[in-house]
Image 1 (spheres, rainbow, N blue to C red):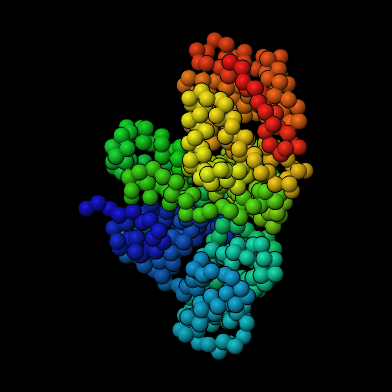
Image 2 (cartoon, one colour; image 1 turned 90 degrees about the vertical axis):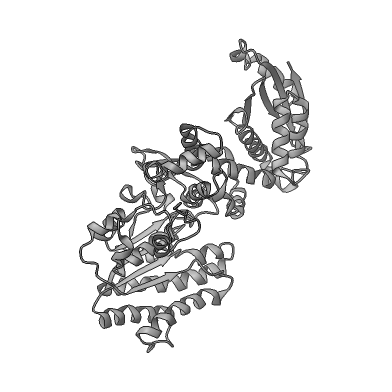
Length: 516
């Protein structure tokens, strides 16, 4: 019987009973439970955080039957059942002051219905504290606390400072209860996408271990290459046949599209689980993870902070800065990392700095395509059509058509960009040539505001120089004077030298010259 792929299914019991594929993470989960008590884990959306919480819930319920054939079956010998307080903040839309209190009340009332509601008129944090103590006393076992997407209310309130402060204060008091109730707690895990340092759960709970960048637990969520090749061998072969690829070509395409996440300096490669499962379920490659979320807010942050998009391919950050997003309005890098749009690419031990970049093609291409209409003027309003058109122009050797299309991207540059016009030009050119690079060989170099481009197709090579408030003649002259085309002298492809001039006065491309 063909197994099912648990796309969108986050319940451990349903997966185990429904003939769904399960990647065995239980040895790591056992290690997590045995080596500590309080944990926080940050991972991007749709990366398996809720399934991890559900698996822990089944484990602490003593459900040995669900772990048959898994590593946990032999590791655990006691299978003690503990009382569990499971708080899921992922299921509600948080729009006003009452939204958060409603969901907290909903969970508290459910627990109070079982263990008593003597404190039901008190504040949420007082009721929570009382529940933890009473449940421990009544059952004779300490309480397990599992909080899924602890930060969802605050993420949805970003941009509304009053509401964000309100949610922050409510959760600060609520989560802070765990410190005073330590003697009644067996285990606690909070998951989320981000880490808000100003929430006291991370200051008052000084024994809360952040395992988000912890080499021991990097593969707790997501799928490693070993897990992919071990658990999906037949699926990989079938996927290859469906897409007319060999097994090795299929593995290479999966790696290029979905691999590349690293959650510590020495982390093994982690594949995006949501995209992998969708790919095998549908037997075709696609941008499944990217298409389930629109990073509009992140793009607004990039624009607000006057971010140079070229840095996306060579960003750096300290470990400390990656752990929080409280400065996101001036530094959007941590939230780009925590949201899964950037990942760790390397580490400098001397300066304790991480090098960041796009994890894979799905994210890189999807994010760059998303940026295009938000930075450039598109006459059709259709990014896919515009990209296809300028790629075809380049491939056909129609430099004039390509440059006319590029010129249109800068039409109607808003007046408020006047002081940042040079950065705006650089950002649009970065997007354009990044997109070109998915279909051609495109290289770009920036230095002191000057951008040189080289684009190669199977028939043509374009060497391009851009000037700001100069002339197209000067740009072309620089190509010749500095012999930028010399490395391609022996190449059989037709070479175009292109000089382009931007004008601040007209806020766009003033003219160009082409020499072949």
